[in-house]
Length: 69
Image (cartoon, rainbow, N blue to C red; front, side, top):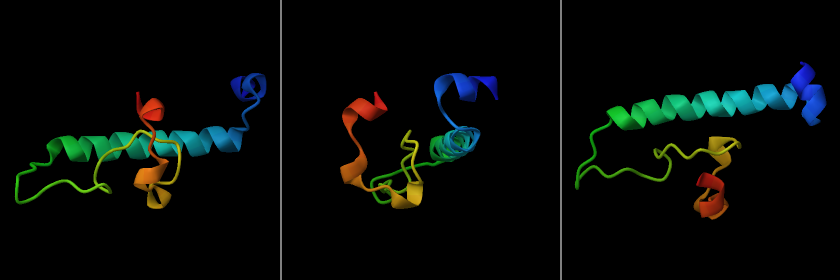
C-alpha cells in the first residue's frame, strides 16, 4: 500500500493493472500453445497484446508500436 501512496497510484488502479497483467499472461500462455497454420490464422482478438486496458475495448487503432516495445 505504501508504494501506491508514493507513486500517486490508487490501490484500486494497481489492482486493475494487475488484473490486466494477469490476463496478458494467461492469453500469452494460451497463444503460445496454439498451433497456427495458413488455414487457421490468428486474429487480432487472439493476439496477446501487452496493454493496460480492457481487451474487449481494444481495437487496432489503439495499438502503438511505442506502447508495446
